[in-house]
Length: 438
Ligand code: NDP
Ligand code: HSE
Image (cartoon, rainbow, N blue to C red; front, side, top):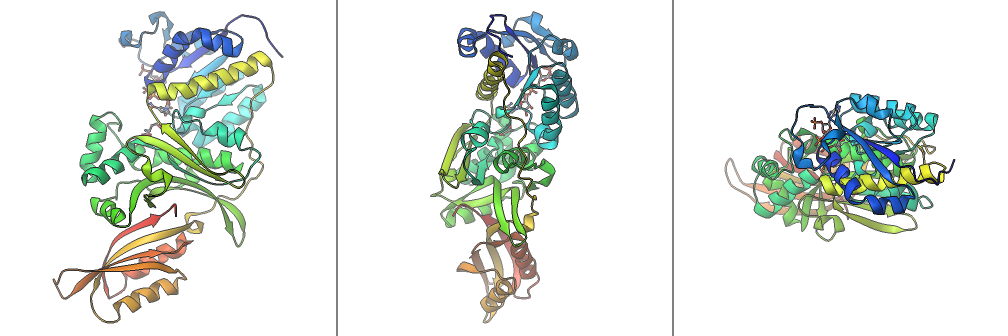
C-alpha cells in the first residue's frame, strides 16, 4: 500500500552507543534531506539503552528520548533499528518488532551469521523488511552491490579484509617489525581493539562477516559455524618478515569461493591469515581500513574500500538502510527477502584450493632436498619455488628451505606439512602460511 501523506515514519533505536548515538545525531542533522529523499519525514521516537542512570549529555540526544523499556518502544515504531549487539536479546527484540509490523535495520553481524534465516522467515511472515548493510565492513556499500547490482552476474569469489583491528595489527607489525602482543596493546590504546580482543584476533568477527558475504554471493545459507576460522594469534614478526622476503604482506582474509570438486560445485568460506603479493589491490589496504575484492564472471574484478568501523562511518550505512526501508513503506512493496535457492553444499576446509608457503629448518646434507620433495610429490602437491638459506652449525650443518607450492587442495597441503614434520631430515617446520591472490 502506498502512503503519500506527511505523517512522519517513526524510528525506534535499540542501542544508543557508538553507532546508535551517531545514527541519532544524523537523523537530527539530516532530517530535511532525509525527508526529501524518502517522501516523508522520519521521527525518532526513542532510544532504548540498558543503563538507566548513565550520563548521556555528551551524545547531544534529547534526554527525554532515552528509555530502558525497549518493548514499549517497539509499539510506537514503523522502523526499528537494532544496535545493541549480542545474540539473544537482539533476536528477541527484532522478532518482536517484526511481529508488530515494523521493518528492521540492524548492524548485528553475529546474530545474522548465526541465525539469519530465522530473521528472514519472520520478516516474510509479517511482510516487513530486513536490511543490514552495516553488518559487513561498516561504511563500505558491499552487501547491496552483491545482492542487487551483481544479481545478473555470477560471483566466483569474494576476498575481504573485513576486520579493521587485525588489519591495523598486521600492518603495524609489517611497518615496525614489532611482535603481536605489543601491537595488539597499541591497537587497544588507540581504541581499535576492545579490552578483550578475542572476537577480532581469533577471527570470530571476520567469520561472521564471511558467512553473510557467502550467503548473499552464492544464494546459499552459510552460518558462521560453517566458516573455517583461524585468527592472527600465531602470527610472529618472523612470518611477517618471511612475507616481505617474498614481496608479499600478511593479511587476515575472509575468502568466500565457489569451488568445483569432483562431486560438484560447493561453497568454501574461510578466514585465515595469508600472504598476498604486494601487487594485489588488497595489499595496499593499510591501518584499520577494510576492503572487499569481488570477482564476478562478467563484471570481472571489483574492489570496494573504506572505513569498516566507527560511529559515523557505520551510521552512514545504517542511515542508507533506514532510507531504503522507509522508501518501501512510502512507495509500497518490499525489499528482497532471503534468496537461498542455490542451496550449495558448504565445503570443509580440506576442499579449499590454496597455496602454501612453508619454511623448514633442515639438516644440510646430501639427499635432504630430495626427501623433502618426495613428501610433496607423495601428496600430489606441486612445488612452485624452493629457496635455500645456509643456516647455523649447531648440531651439524643446517639450512632453511623456503618452499612455495602451486595451488592444491588444503587437505593435501596440511597432510604434506604433517609428513614433513615427521621427516628425520627436518629439524623443525618453522612457518606455514597460505598464499592467496596470485
Ligand atoms: P555499544 O556497546 O557502543 O552500544 C550498545 C548500546 O546498546 C548501548 O547504548 C547499550 O546501552 C545498549 N544495550 C546493550 N544491551 C542492551 C539491552 N539488553 N537492552 C537495551 N539496550 C541495550 O555498541 P556499538 O554501537 O559499537 O555496536 C552496536 C552494533 O553495531 C553491534 O551489533 C556491533 O557489532 C555493530 N557494529 C559496530 C561497529 C562499530 O564500529 N562500533 C561497526 C559495525 C557494526 P548502555 O548505553 O546503557 O550501555
Ligand atoms: N571490531 C570490528 C573491526 C569492527 O575491528 O573491524 C566491527 O565490525
